[in-house]
Image 1 (cartoon, rainbow, N blue to C red):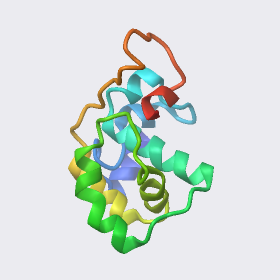
Image 2: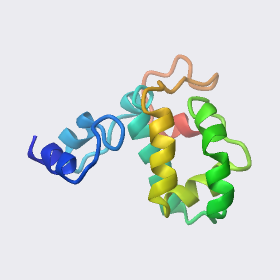
Image 3: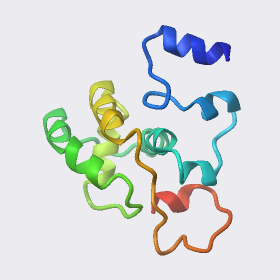
Length: 128
């Protein structure tokens, strides 16, 4: 609870900028099941993945122009050719990530055809 209060004191919004469930986990990662139901954690997972993978970011101008389109396709697990460059930019740009957060905070990620029937997974299946 103290961590959550600290985040709110910094001006972050619960369920938009951070997930209360994920904060309660401490250093542990949210489960794949949680990623399939939480847009906040899915967005943060994608941004973290981009940062860890070292993908080349698109320019700020290009990313800002694509935020709305990326939000519209946010719940779809398939990736197009712009996915990596867009999320790599979000890993470096808090403004664009905040814009995407506002547009996607209440979306529930959908399971793709490859995931149906899977009870368990690493969470990476959500991303493919």
